[in-house]
Amino acid sequence: ARLELARAVADESKSKSLLRVQMGEETGAPVLLADMGPPPQDGVEKDLGRFLEKSRNSHPAILAARRETDAAKARVDQARADGLPVLDLTANRYGNAYPGQGLQAGKMEQSSVGLSVSVPFFEGFQRTYKVREAESQVKQSEARALDVERRVLADLTSIHADAVSSLSLVEAARLLLG
Image (cartoon, rainbow, N blue to C red; front, side):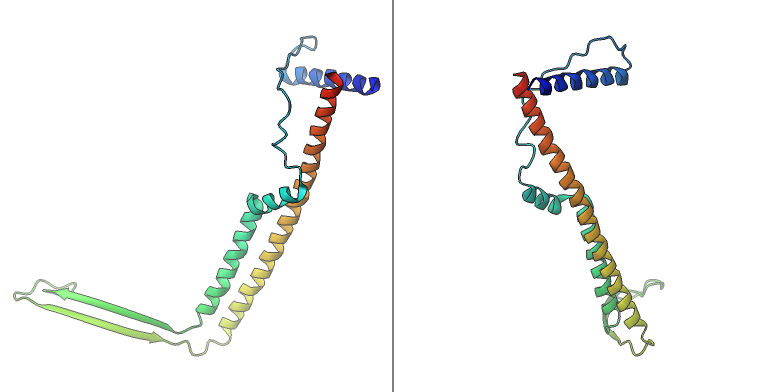
């Protein structure tokens, strides 16, 4: 126990010396640190599985990768829809003149309704190629999203382990000093 206490005191002295140098103070000046009280125990999620699940649903990099995948899927739908027939409906109402004409002397009203259908006939399989390209972009986007999620969760696992062990060390040091 004395050896642990000696190490803790040496680490404290080293940290204070490094802090003095970083602050531009003379090395002999005393460093007074405020007592922060006990570390917050509720700030660190103890259960790694819950911590990673929360992160999976809220980490910005993971969410951005998912949005990119969603956008790629929407481009597939758009590419498929471009090959479907299009129905256009137009309606116009004119009073006392047509656009670009002067006003008429008498009262005149005219309404018109139009309906047009455009049916794609044959484009040399261009549409099929666009759909396949969009589908391959979805697969690439899904692979990138999975890679981002794995990297982020691996980093967070390491950070979680460091945080939990640091809190344990702080508590052990507090018991040794107290």
